[in-house]
Amino acid sequence: MDIVQIYECLCDRTRLRILHLLAQGPLCVCHFQSVLREPQVKISKHLAYLRARGMVEVERRGTWMMYSLPAKTPPELSANLACLQDCVRDEPVFRGDLARLRKYAPTFDPCPCAKS
Amino acid sequence: MDIVQIYECLCDRTRLRILHLLAQGPLCVCHFQSVLREPQVKISKHLAYLRARGMVEVERRGTWMMYSLPAKTPPELSANLACLQDCVRDEPVFRGDLARLRKYAPTFDPCPCAKS
DNA sequence: CCGGAATATACTGCAAGAGGAATATGGCGG
DNA sequence: CCGCCATATTCCTCTTGCAGTATATTCCGG
Image (cartoon, rainbow over all chains, first blue to last red):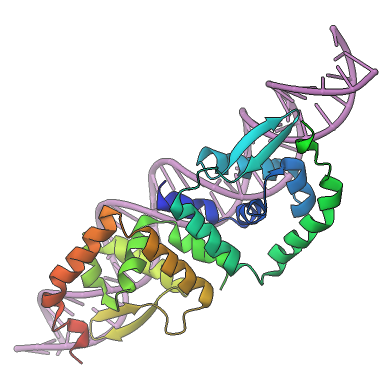
């Protein structure tokens, strides 16, 4: 995995928020919509961008698409993701995302993606 | 310092090489030219890009411009620079840069920038 | 004051990327 | 088989960024 490509993936705020959330565990597009409060097309396109570069993986579950960090995350990627977690710990946007993720978690459970 | 801007600065290979070298200490543009083997205008423009975003600092020494990492490096920046050092440790391009830096070091010494 | 060296700044062409609107796809329940 | 839901893709526009060529600036030595 090219280090420059990693940074290209990290240089958009929406993608940062996505990756930040994925560190907590797999999520569906509908989850991202609720938590990030961004339109579907935006999220979907950024996920496609990340997927094309191997930064996330997808698994279909019925109509839902389950996104997660790659099972075999290359070391450069995990190092940078760890760094990211650290850097945004105090940023309101990211804290808000985490808070909303936890707030919504009950309604995600049973998560539509997990019902197979 | 905005985290997204940091990543924007990191998502070009030339800039990565510049920052990687600066971790070793301050350098003049002429040094970068020798070590990176890239045209002057390219280096100069990337340095301007970094400077405009506060990722490097400049000090004039006669005709030479002395670039360095900012004296008060924000934590997000230093965290990412540390991560960068770690990630590129085994990449030939970056190893080559370091080797050339050290090989040229004797001719940099007395460094034109240091002669004031 | 003049020429040259080191560095910076237009200017141009081009490609990539971001956002939004609309449309397409693919699976599921009835 | 139909319609709906979740998601993806296409099309368009706008902006940013990179590279190169040429030109400007700034300082120095004589």
